[in-house]
Length: 459
Image (cartoon, rainbow, N blue to C red; front, side, top):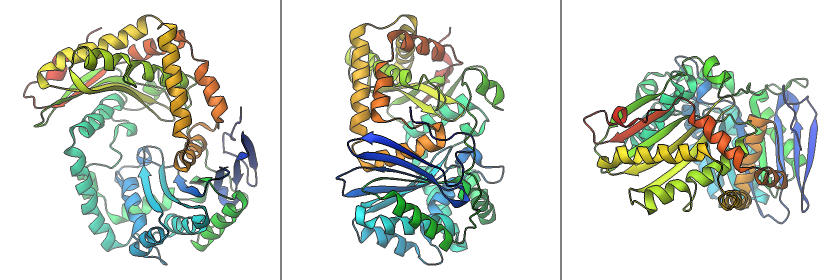
């Protein structure tokens, strides 16, 4: 299987080429300064998606800097010495393209989707933003209010509140338990100097990963990236290596023990909101991003709560009519993960729905599923994988996540082979491992009493 360099992530000048079939190719180069560039050519595509990743997320913020990573995502669009905010927006509007950014707990990505002929422009603008952001004091002050409004919008969405609180329960005071965008208190408190310090410390050549997919020329892109970085004033050490990837760990042993603040027992939390529905999340620790069982987890999700034919959908919605939305999910990080079941139901049905969620999870953990159900789950995920990679944006994102998280790039054929190799016992064993972890229950709704404590299933 194709393996991207691990450890320091490759030496300067190193290159990897992977033939992905049908004339397509993935290439990876390490440039001066330790900058990594990965491209996937897609013959016949008239569009391309470009992304500049910094392998730094909200978990990397130090005390006094909480919320800085997401703050930077906003501020980088506000101007550089050569472009103001209007010029940045107009550059993409003028060619029918789109640009945006996303902050995660372990990385931040600034990306644009444009016609293939406009890749040089997209590269120039985004690299300029990443290397030369002004972080103007006036813009900082006004954007603080924008972020506070964004956080208020999240607080108004009971589903978002449930997921935020659930993560806090699972990971405790560990940095993975913090909200990506910070809290109103941290955003109000963080000064521009702290955000600027975070920018200077984390936005460095060795942390920069550039990915592009579609109608893109790898060699030309490497030249454009280098030229842009140098115009931005970054010093490029010809011998510098890329930053090392995060250490990986077993979420069922090393992470809870080694992760300061991670709880070793389950918990229940009720959050009062004046809503028509209760939002329920039940779960706990999951798989780390590089865990070999991640393919079994995708099949587990498909069977348990990932489709209209899944067990949760059939039992909770179709047979009993207790919920409109019900599903299972997994979130993976370098050294830990989270797994959960969600349902939205009438407030008076919380205990019954929680019992059904727990029951279906336990049943899946107790005995292997039949061949027909397994084949349906595998078929669903194989189709979703292929269909999900039909556009350049998903392929660009796949390159970035492979480089930053796992260090392993799988072709579509290899990913399909791993999915098809999953057995019913693989799924049952993983479901049992997940079920054995400390379980947490979050309930958001119009409750005066602690409904979650009363509904949390006992072993």
